[in-house]
Length: 191
Image (tube, rainbow, N blue to C red):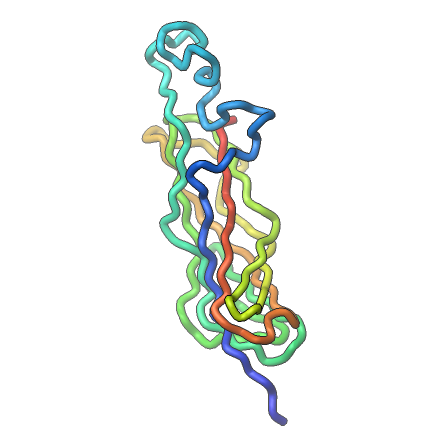
């Protein structure tokens, strides 16, 4: 019995637009600044520094990506649904359905947030992302998970690093195979 096999390479790039509005824009003006730095004072001694005057660190939040998610090389072995789970803890990928592993290094994503030391933050990731290829193939990244604690906080150096992974889901839209790419919009704000 002959089965159609189509090569698929799946990688995710992260989109962090430099001038993009934060998720809470409009509800929380200047949420990229710590509380106490959002008014006119900004910790400069003119008020609103929460009584700390010039001691307040009013550093804006920044996100950098140390590693993109990469599922390695995969092969479609039919036209039904296939799933590839990238395990956050081990970095291993496991397949089910009409997809199989052809090797290649699977990589979990790694992001770093920089801001004011010892400040709590909220991180927002989308629920699903469509990945596509220039040839018209599509797949979906679902069920994103992170190793963030329940209450993420920047450390004493103003940094927080976290890993993230998810599940790649293929279907009839992926039948052509190719090099699928997508962008994961991540936003962050001070609490």
